[in-house]
Image (cartoon, rainbow, N blue to C red; front, side, top):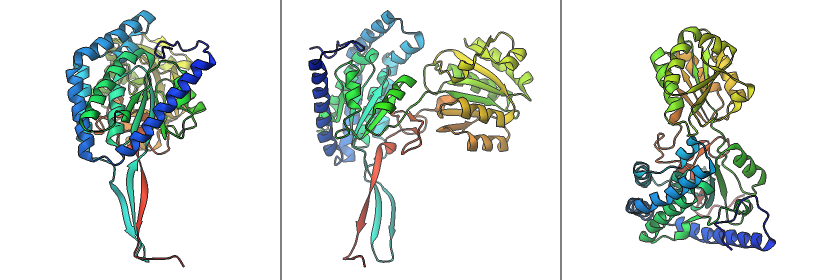
Length: 435
């Protein structure tokens, strides 16, 4: 049976399902064994693997781009929209960025073994809270081949084994990238099983991955709402949820006009396909007549389609009407919803009602308004006078990210190497017994 060519959605014979279950259990078993080795690997050994993997990516550029060309051709044949093809596309520049990202991760402090806190009790017992790897991390993601390298490198840096299940559209690209990562692991004397990709596009493999708590410690899904909801509903393993990027930019009464224009255009149009791209622009009613027309003009000049509420359309002509569904839509395209709100309170209310708790920004020179926004907007990342496109682990100094967690448990915001660790307590005594 060809696992790669199985088509999602087709019924499969019990024997085929059994084959996939057995394959996934074997992947999990090997990952668990590799995780035990990685947990004890030195910082120097892990960093050597990352540098060697970066060198392999550069050396294998022609093969990786050829694999990506297969994925791009298939995506265009399927009729994927341009913004999704852009997510999938690799070129020499992007691949160099991926290789450089591995080197940045190698240069980060090793979180494993770091002392988080230490104290001594009156009885003489000495306590230490120390970072340790999570273990085995399953990453399920859609058509972003760069995530293959980001996730693999961050898991390795934090001493975790990774099981990668990328989207079917990026299958060939991700497989080629994993081959380069394996070269780095071999050169450093670490097990190749530390980074494994699921060798099938059959969705049954995802279902099995979600139900292997004996082998998998955490699931990290990256993708659309349907993927996240499936993972949250079916997983028997803890989940770091990366939900929709329903990001907002709010232009306050105290906004500087030039900053408002620059930030709004960059937040939406720098790259429309990333999760940190703004999907809704909110403008304070007190300055909408003055501020919205130049911002709307700049957005349209950059190629953005605007969908406004009645108040926004009355101020800046040429907008399409916004429906109620638009406020809850992650376009990932050159489309932006626009609403006029009643000050910072109205903006906060709109964001907390329609947002996905991902990333939201206020543009203002009013310090009090900024602090209220930063305090009351319930999102993982909240910015003042900066573009939402800074929602990226690299921009936070994490080297890369495995995703932006919109949940509240364990990790929130960009999930880097440090967020991929847990901790344990070390207690040292001199013979104490408890009375």
